Picture 1 (tube, rainbow, N blue to C red):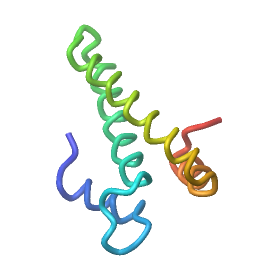
Picture 2 (picture 1 turned 60 degrees about the vertical axis):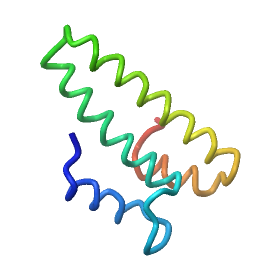
Picture 3 (picture 1 turned 135 degrees about the vertical axis):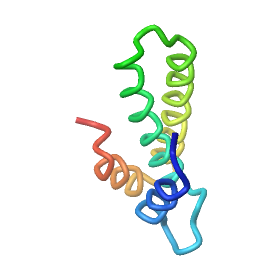
Picture 4 (picture 1 turned 180 degrees about the vertical axis):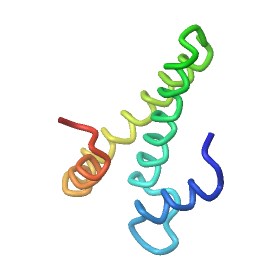
Length: 88
């Protein structure tokens, strides 16, 4: 689970402007961090089906945000994908 300090740090790193807390870039960065934490949890607890379902929902949500950003602004999409290392 993301603590308030971790969340604030991620928001500051991904924010488009000073008071930004809900842009697509911030949402994608937060979802990516949650995905990483859940993936490491599932490595330890392979039979945790409820967490696996939640992980799939978060991945789908991030995919939706990425698709939206790609159609809206390709430059910002490319920047966030490169920054988070999502595509190979």
